[in-house]
Image (cartoon, rainbow, N blue to C red; front, side):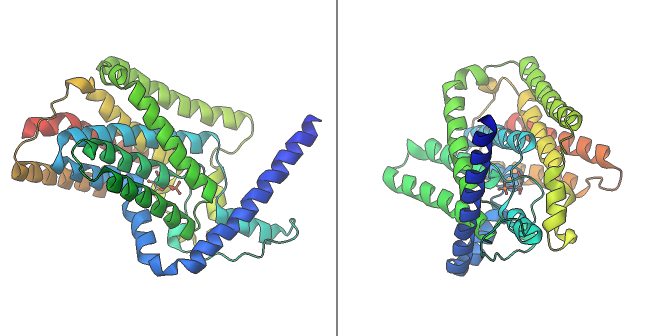
Length: 341
Ligand SMILES: O=P(O)(O)OC[C@H]1O[C@@H](O)[C@H](O)[C@@H](O)[C@@H]1O
């Protein structure tokens, strides 16, 4: 009975994702006019660039906004990386190529999807990181501006439109199924709700408490790795899938593996933890020109550190450096930036 239920669940899942491939195909066929916009959203609004460029730029408007964004998007991105790490799910192009290569499923879906360098992601699909981080990013800004805006309904519509465009971008590039985008947004909203309810508690945590929390998360990530190995589950399954199905391996990047993103996100959280308690942070704004200059210097420094990333000295040095760089970057943004003003 249990076996039958499981088989039924697997069969239903396969039907749903195979049907969803048509949605990717439809978006590619009908919305190709928006190609530059879909590429722009996936390349310039991806979580990494939000942390390294877009969120610091928001600091020109307000240090309080920058603090909230870094906290909310940092936690959402970490949650996303953990879900991908613990329960990886396939991506549309992997499924499609698997179906055609193995020829086990009939009837064949009769779908053709275009792929290119932007389609070659090496992390798992579920939940869509772009949709999740972008939802938290836009909603945090919207909530921050809400009090000052006269046209609230218009701002709300713009936010919905932007999030929907991000879904279309991921569907168009065939990197995500529709359910992965929708669930990315849904989980992002739920996470924001939970953070909102525990806001006072989290923002008043002492540094020691917060740093211990980040170490525990690091321990959890390592534990998942070893548990998977002992169960003979490949922890790098998504990377292998990407290598198997990407048309050209040179499209894939060192710094796009699930472990890299976990380390990046834990580095950001470590910077936030070192700056805790967040409720004590100075969020007053200096004059506009001073904010621009200080932020420009800080981001040039961060850019230099990214440029100097040691990529040829082995995986451990690479990951340790990324952890350190992200921790320093978010610590400087939160704690030292207001002092430099
Ligand atoms: O899940 P998505 O939207 O396909 O994104 C894959 C990866 O894309 C990268 O650009 C992000 O920095 C990562 O955080 C993310 O995991």
